[in-house]
Length: 495
RNA sequence: GGCGGCAUAGCCAAGUGGUAAGGCAGGGGCCUGCAAAGCCUUUACCCCCAGUUCGAAUCUGGGUGCCGCCUCCA
Image (tube, rainbow, N blue to C red; front, side, top):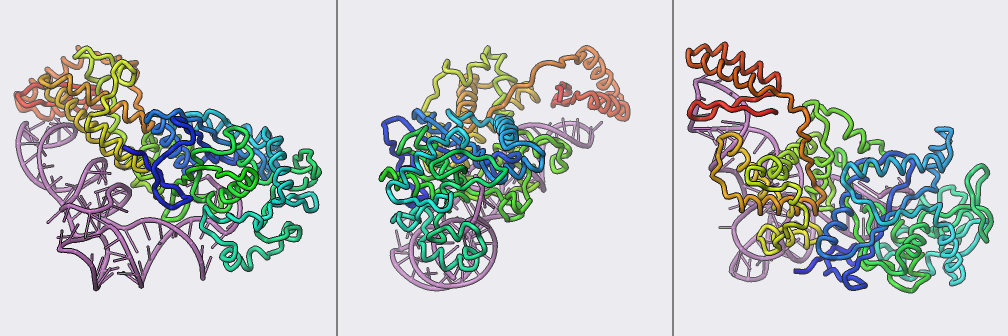
């Protein structure tokens, strides 16, 4: 089977071939750290975490780099607002980023370059561009000469003429930079320092880098002149990634990335979630509060992950109460399957810890594994992959329920173990993991419960249902649920 | 105005030529004193029109609607 990836550059799905056999070099455009991450960020980084995990599972050695933009007007504004510094604001939100992403079980990248740590690389790149005639200095700024780069527009499918037509009235607006630019579509590689703002020395005077250049420089520094996969949000295709290609390829003469992948947006009421529209929900706000749509429960981080994974990464997803409630319920179903071995395995002498260990090698010829692989090989179709997980989880849940509710012991342990192991392994590829409940508050007095059940049985026998219901309610209030099994036997379990 | 994408059950969402995965929600049945839980079971001809084909949700053309980008943006 062949892994195929939709390449924004060609607008087609293409078979995946690496530059170096078995190795993948991957770069992800990260966040500008001036605020907490919202669901759009969650969606994006879950998607790329998925790609990375799947590639690793498929046997590739993946080197994954994601940047932090820590030089930016918005960070400066925030710092002014808070009476703080750009460094302090960046540091704070980088920490917050890690906290949020850890909760979503997003694996840490292999490297997190920052603009402030990449100034040498940035200046070297600008210097090289200038030397080759793709950049020009103007009044302390340095601009990229878009018309010099013949391939400009190849990623986003744009032609400069088209841009011109649509941009009339916008580009010609009063813009101090416009005066310095040779062409309205040129963009800044380096910006002259403004008083009171952080600045770095350079051949062009004190200043700071433009936004697009940092990614080109970071890729070059961390991964080399050519990489396999470059990823980011669909809203970065133009101009950010287009400019990145121009900057990098103008210097190297080589294709920057073999595959360009872009994730779809998170929508609210059909509109893109974004800072500027103010319709965003931060990850921590969503996870830390009880939600009316979940009957006052808070959303499980894995349910949020599931919400994202239920749609293919390129499609937009709509953030609604109904979607969140559905995801939470879906997660409970999956979770019951994932915890099957922990809940019921001991009776067969299973070691729950071995489910995702190497002790038991996943059988890749298993039909479930094959269907999963087939779906995921098709441009990371997590939606299709999840269908396989749910089928396994539902089977296991049914078996578990038969054991709990009907005392069924006549089940095929070997088959169940295989299913459970497969489920846990595949779920892990999607980053979905359930932690077994710590058997902490085992403070239930089972003797007392049994005694009450006996009392209730007696009441039922004399048809004193008021009394029997009272006992049932009393136990319910303590979190003890009763199961009246066929045949008059009553069992109980802790909720 | 330019470029790109999407339209499948109540909701979400796979499926890209052979008569529709999966999830959520709902219906029915069994069990029960009633209930809960559980178990069993059930719910679509794929936006519209025309065409290609033995055969199309799936290909082509034309509509309609929605979204993204063209300004910072995951």
